[in-house]
Image (tube, rainbow, N blue to C red; front, side, top):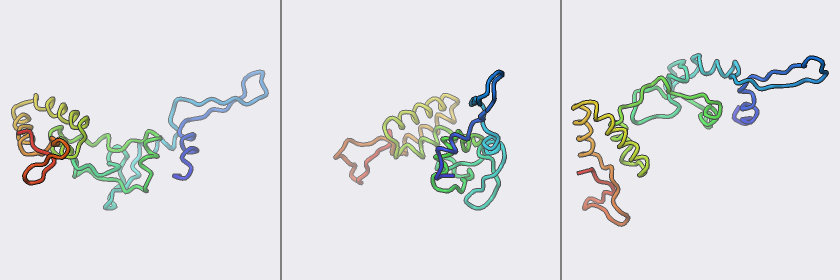
Length: 166
């Protein structure tokens, strides 16, 4: 399957062949619907996790381990299959809720690029407007998590390249 991704991609839609009235040639059309085999992969459980538990539907399992959702099951996939699944619009983990934005900031912020850090910060700030508990958690993360990179050539006395907000 991974060796013939072009063919698999062409099979993902329903193709209709017909002979029009008063014609002797075959015409074809591609319908805007997924092929039944792809619908089956999206709707039915067929995936097993790394521990061999399952089967899971694609929506109920992650394709890769996510540090912000450590308890979510991760699919045991052949290398390259996640890329092929993405090309087929077969998505993993949609039914698994995202971790709270502040937890994502704590987990991914220390290694995030500036644009990604900005997105994480905006999500966490939006979430913090939800109540005093969220705001307290965000303050704690900003105080303790090294999110902000120092300029090139600069380090702290303990050789850190990133520092907390204050």
